[in-house]
Amino acid sequence: MPVLQTATLPESTLIPAGAASDLPPGARKLVFRPDGQTILLLKVEGEFYAMDNSCPHAGASMASGQCEGHTISCPAHGLKFNIRSGQCTASPGLLIPLYETLILEGELWLRLS
Image (cartoon, rainbow, N blue to C red; front, side, top):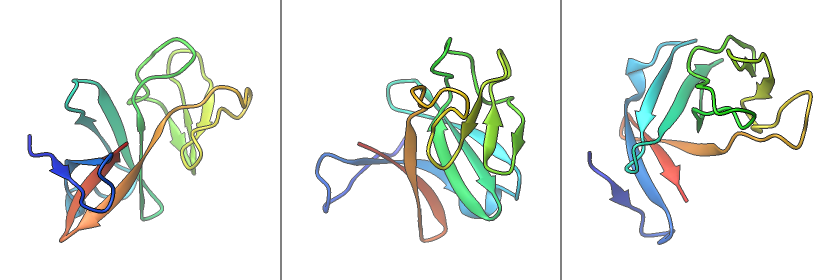
């Protein structure tokens, strides 16, 4: 998997997530980090969002969670998270880490810090 070190932010790494055109509206996919962990990538209302694919409550995969607007539900226990902030709607102390998404020459990249 190609990894790109960014010149402007030396502590930052970009990982490829495929062609932006390959993810239709409402779609989602898993992207693998270099350490083997997965990131959930979603396209909602024309924007791309990326978050850890693990619920902070008990570690369940978020990949099959129902997404309505900018809220995704954990399929294991029903906790809801805002995909723009990562914050749990019922318990603000629970956060899912988010990743910046970039489109460079038609390709999607996720920034790891």
